[in-house]
Amino acid sequence: MRSFKLALLAPLMLVGIAPEAAAIDANKWRTLSEPEMRSYVIATVDAWINFHANIKKYSDPSKHSSSEAIFFDVAECIIQRKSTYDQIFNATRDYVERRTDRREYNMAAVTWNAVSEMCKS
Image (tube, rainbow, N blue to C red; front, side, top):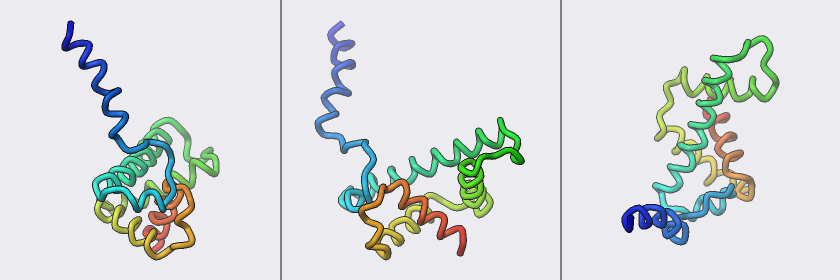
Protein backbone atom coordinates (compact mmCIF):
# COMPACT_ATOMS: atom_id res chain seq x y z
CA MET A 1 0.00 0.00 0.00
CA ARG A 2 2.86 2.37 0.80
CA SER A 3 4.45 1.96 -2.65
CA PHE A 4 1.05 2.64 -4.22
CA LYS A 5 0.80 5.94 -2.31
CA LEU A 6 4.33 6.89 -3.35
CA ALA A 7 3.48 6.12 -6.97
CA LEU A 8 0.51 8.46 -6.74
CA LEU A 9 2.60 11.21 -5.15
CA ALA A 10 5.58 10.97 -7.50
CA PRO A 11 4.01 13.04 -10.33
CA LEU A 12 3.03 15.72 -7.83
CA MET A 13 6.59 15.92 -6.54
CA LEU A 14 7.88 16.37 -10.10
CA VAL A 15 5.57 19.31 -10.74
CA GLY A 16 7.89 21.57 -8.78
CA ILE A 17 10.94 20.67 -10.87
CA ALA A 18 9.44 20.12 -14.31
CA PRO A 19 9.36 22.98 -16.82
CA GLU A 20 5.99 24.61 -17.32
CA ALA A 21 3.81 23.08 -19.99
CA ALA A 22 1.80 26.19 -20.82
CA ALA A 23 2.09 27.84 -24.20
CA ILE A 24 5.31 29.80 -24.35
CA ASP A 25 6.74 32.42 -26.63
CA ALA A 26 9.98 32.11 -28.59
CA ASN A 27 11.91 34.12 -25.99
CA LYS A 28 10.97 31.59 -23.30
CA TRP A 29 11.68 28.69 -25.69
CA ARG A 30 15.22 29.99 -26.21
CA THR A 31 15.88 29.69 -22.44
CA LEU A 32 15.04 25.97 -22.39
CA SER A 33 17.69 23.28 -22.59
CA GLU A 34 18.20 21.85 -26.07
CA PRO A 35 16.35 18.59 -25.21
CA GLU A 36 13.39 20.66 -23.96
CA MET A 37 13.48 22.83 -27.08
CA ARG A 38 13.54 19.75 -29.29
CA SER A 39 10.72 18.13 -27.32
CA TYR A 40 8.56 21.22 -27.74
CA VAL A 41 9.05 21.30 -31.52
CA ILE A 42 8.58 17.54 -31.91
CA ALA A 43 5.38 17.51 -29.86
CA THR A 44 4.00 20.43 -31.86
CA VAL A 45 4.77 18.79 -35.20
CA ASP A 46 3.47 15.40 -34.02
CA ALA A 47 0.14 17.07 -33.20
CA TRP A 48 -0.03 18.43 -36.75
CA ILE A 49 0.80 15.03 -38.26
CA ASN A 50 -1.81 13.35 -36.09
CA PHE A 51 -4.41 15.95 -37.10
CA HIS A 52 -3.43 15.36 -40.74
CA ALA A 53 -3.88 11.59 -40.36
CA ASN A 54 -7.35 12.09 -38.90
CA ILE A 55 -8.34 14.53 -41.63
CA LYS A 56 -7.08 12.13 -44.28
CA LYS A 57 -8.85 9.15 -42.75
CA TYR A 58 -12.18 10.68 -41.77
CA SER A 59 -12.95 13.55 -44.11
CA ASP A 60 -13.50 14.26 -47.77
CA PRO A 61 -10.60 16.43 -49.04
CA SER A 62 -12.97 18.40 -51.25
CA LYS A 63 -14.87 19.51 -48.14
CA HIS A 64 -11.93 20.60 -45.97
CA SER A 65 -12.30 23.84 -44.09
CA SER A 66 -9.61 26.42 -44.72
CA SER A 67 -7.99 25.47 -41.38
CA GLU A 68 -7.96 21.79 -42.29
CA ALA A 69 -6.52 22.58 -45.70
CA ILE A 70 -3.67 24.62 -44.21
CA PHE A 71 -2.75 21.88 -41.71
CA PHE A 72 -3.13 19.26 -44.41
CA ASP A 73 -0.75 21.06 -46.79
CA VAL A 74 2.01 21.60 -44.23
CA ALA A 75 1.73 18.05 -42.93
CA GLU A 76 1.81 16.72 -46.51
CA CYS A 77 4.99 18.73 -47.10
CA ILE A 78 6.65 17.22 -44.02
CA ILE A 79 5.60 13.72 -45.05
CA GLN A 80 6.43 14.01 -48.76
CA ARG A 81 9.85 15.54 -48.07
CA LYS A 82 10.47 12.87 -45.42
CA SER A 83 11.58 15.69 -43.15
CA THR A 84 13.35 14.51 -40.02
CA TYR A 85 12.86 15.92 -36.55
CA ASP A 86 16.42 17.25 -36.75
CA GLN A 87 15.64 19.13 -39.96
CA ILE A 88 12.47 20.59 -38.49
CA PHE A 89 14.17 21.53 -35.23
CA ASN A 90 17.09 23.17 -37.07
CA ALA A 91 14.74 25.09 -39.35
CA THR A 92 12.81 26.27 -36.30
CA ARG A 93 15.91 27.27 -34.34
CA ASP A 94 17.35 29.09 -37.36
CA TYR A 95 14.05 30.89 -37.89
CA VAL A 96 13.91 32.04 -34.25
CA GLU A 97 17.49 33.29 -34.37
CA ARG A 98 16.96 35.11 -37.66
CA ARG A 99 13.49 36.52 -36.97
CA THR A 100 14.03 38.47 -33.77
CA ASP A 101 10.76 40.31 -34.48
CA ARG A 102 8.86 37.05 -33.88
CA ARG A 103 10.27 36.14 -30.49
CA GLU A 104 7.26 37.42 -28.56
CA TYR A 105 4.92 35.22 -30.60
CA ASN A 106 3.52 31.92 -29.38
CA MET A 107 6.13 29.24 -30.05
CA ALA A 108 3.67 26.92 -31.78
CA ALA A 109 2.95 29.71 -34.27
CA VAL A 110 6.66 30.39 -34.70
CA THR A 111 7.25 26.68 -35.36
CA TRP A 112 4.44 26.84 -37.92
CA ASN A 113 6.08 29.80 -39.66
CA ALA A 114 9.47 28.07 -39.68
CA VAL A 115 8.09 24.84 -41.14
CA SER A 116 5.98 26.72 -43.70
CA GLU A 117 9.08 28.61 -44.77
CA MET A 118 11.04 25.35 -44.97
CA CYS A 119 8.30 23.86 -47.17
CA LYS A 120 8.48 26.79 -49.59
CA SER A 121 12.22 26.49 -50.13
